[in-house]
Image (cartoon, rainbow, N blue to C red):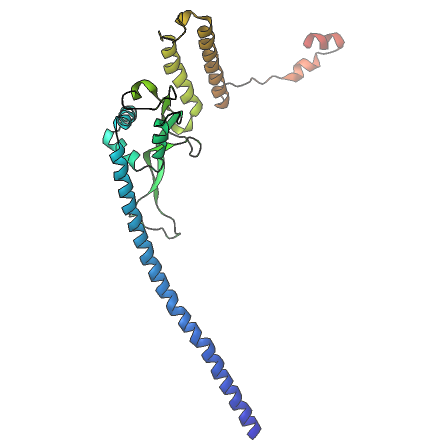
Length: 272
């Protein structure tokens, strides 16, 4: 009996020690976890404030760089997209690809500078989470700088093209930079390109008087061949677009009627 009592006492002592070993650390683990969550929330809030502060500083630094070259781009964009110059300026200053403008102005810089103006899903700053954890994103028109290869094109494209490798200055920007636009609403790029070439570019080329070193102008055979090639390209583009849109439909033919009338080799030759 004494041995059983001692054995039971040992078991009780061990179970108490085991319970302390499990219970103690579990409590000390839970408490730091909740405080860590609170700290992470505080840090994330502080980080957001710091990022917003840095964004404001960057925006004002960019604003100080605005000169006649930027004003020329802003003016063309505002006229073409029907926005105010102030709206265009604020949008450009906040764009994360703002440096592309400086690369475009540089000697031997980028040959093109593209802007898209189209619907973009944007989350409202005060939007609350849905039960499934998602947010209410609404499409809004947005103007942004793009390389043209990373975003889907579904709206209007405004572009600037350089005519030489010279540095772009406030005094030569209107001569060295060409501006154009084409509309691809609903992502119909072929139709937008066809309209731009046929209604804008080709008429402009055919009315061009100064062809540089080519003194004969439109009478020159090379110029005529070039214009013919552009016309032919637009025709091919139009045919391709109509094929894609199923506007050209092939008529079904009842082949059996013709096959039944083929009796000998000469009939096959005639049918071929």
